Length: 211
Image (cartoon, rainbow, N blue to C red; front, top):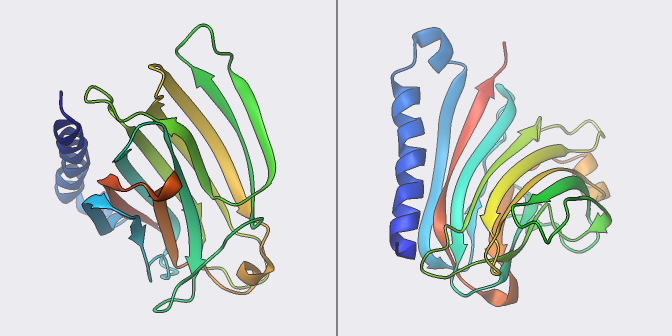
């Protein structure tokens, strides 16, 4: 199966979520709202900018699927702030912790406690062969719009196909080390690949309305 077919299949799954949302009962549909999408082929990054600003939603969730343009590239994400003119947080601005499991018996499952990191999402050595499905993920923010001095938090899960031919599943959490985000909300998130490799994929952003 070609990479384009893999991405098309991933898109069909996300579009299916749109169709389900469109046909939900009124009380449910007003709680779970599609807000934005981002997609592209051979792009330097995929991002949502100047979003996640409405206090109508306590939770913002992203569903995504992507594959790097060359084999064995890491997939990263960074948070941004500033609305129309986005500033992205760089090195040493995040604290991550998580748990990773492998389908290959020769590789052991492990807890990952990163301490200070440069990324708000990190998936190593994502495969690019014609049969590789790339990476699929869910990413959830809790109240990214807060400006009251508290740290911002998020959690994510992903499944990816490693470049050495086995599947990895990861569950992780992240919060900001950066003091800049204590009094400013997160208004953006950007996904990209290591070594300036391009990526192909798409993402959908949803908001869970406050009760």
